[in-house]
Amino acid sequence: EIVMTQSPATLSVSPGERATLSCRASQSVGGNLAWYQQKPGQAPRLLIFGTSTRATGIPARFSGSGSATEFTLTVSSLQSEDFAVYYCQQYNNWPYTFGQGTKLEIK
Amino acid sequence: EVQLVESGGVVVQPGGSLRLSCAASGFTFDDYAMHWVRQAPGKGLEWVSLITWDDGNTYYADSVKGRFTISRDNNRNSLYLQMNRLRPEDTALYYCAKAVAATGGLFDYWGQGTLVTVSS
Image 1 (tube, helix red, strand yellow):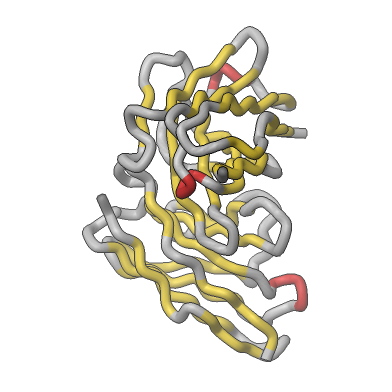
Image 2 (cartoon, rainbow over the protein chains, first blue to last red):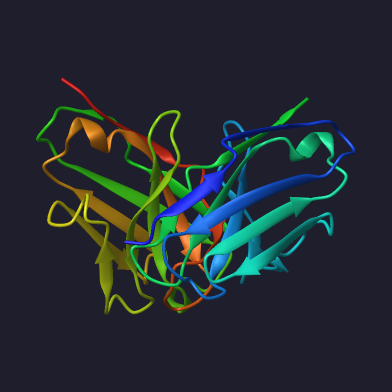
């Protein structure tokens, strides 16, 4: 099983600033890495797939990068609606695994 | 508009059984693989099971293998999860999720979940 590790667990950022979230895989997942956003009481929403492709309707302030085992989600100019929990997920091999999540909170 | 509506979550005793359902609409159901993903209270996401578009292949997390069975009825646009020999650690919100293709583990739509509580 591929273990996904996200850092930090909690990130405090002011609105308008940039946030950088990290995700590491225990072995290469190629480019098969996705990011999801989850707000309290809501289902997860797909943000990024294929490491860097934004899903339909996702604003351009969200961007993904990386390869193999190291990945990054960047949110430029944070808006109030961006404060949530973010999960990375590898879909290169089953069992499909998620990171433990990064909570992005208002500073 | 894609909609996934889960049902069947209840409080059940350890060792009991339960069947979850997911009603799908807004897309051609039998073109896509479907998944169950769960989230224990206050915890992260855990993939549970996958069924390919044609019911030909099923996959399970080790934590549920041999106890849970995923199935689908393409005529009814419905996904199911039969859960047997339930344990307290199976307590979670269970999401139905649509894959982006006929197989594979990338999810583009999720339901709102149904809560399963395993407790005596």
